[in-house]
Amino acid sequence: MLKRAIVVGASSGIGEALVRRLCREGYLVAGVARRKEALDHLAAEINRPGEARFFVYPHDVIETANAKGVFDRIVTELDGLDVVIYAAGVMPRVGEDQFDGAIDRQIFEVNVIGAMAWLDLAAERFQAQHGGMIVGLGSVAGDRGRRGQPAYCASKAALHTYLEALRNRLSRFGVHVLTVKPGPVHTPMTKGLDKLPMAIEADAAAEGILRAMNRRADVAYVPFQWGIIMPIIQSIPSLIFRRMSL
Image (cartoon, rainbow, N blue to C red; front, side, top):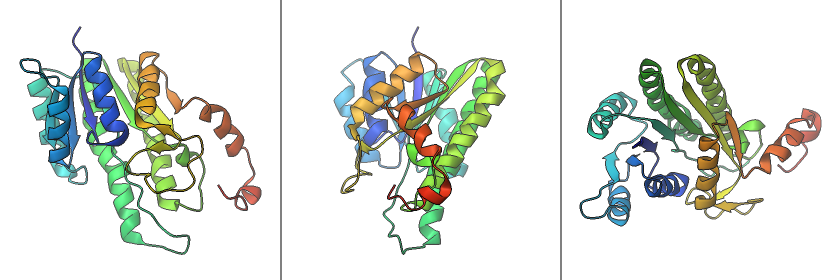
């Protein structure tokens, strides 16, 4: 049966890699991102004459008031919806002596408020149709408060908790909610960073995410080794953790 998906944050990184894989697997995919030219370029690569699988919907996720209009148009034009993936995210560079409320606000507007705006819409629709899948891209950074990126860590922790709450609310309606926690991934967002332990390419991350979707996991670390490492890191007492360069 033909499946239809929305990927928010589709213009680069993991979101772009997910679009390519979903289209190869036969999905119709609506790509949402603020950079229309990047979406158009992706569409030109994917679509073939007489066989369009990827559709472009320019939208900036911080403009939450416009999300419903874009969402409703996608559902109408795709003639239904089965999967919504929120892959949009920002991680501006901040120094350890830098405290900037404007940057913190930007991080939360994209990583949390934008996610809630789109995934609330998905949740409402999927609850009504008694089926569907919601996927949110968190991060291993959300499992502990790391000194290098306080707001980014907090935003991903907030997203993890929001997704867990959605899962608990929607499971009785046949709706599946997957929380993905990638480790470092080589993307434009991480370009230039020095410390990227066990970093993988975006396509490898997308492959791991699709495997987790297919097995209907609740929480998936990507790659899976982080599912072994992070419980150990979480068990480190705060007094010790604060002295570590993590």
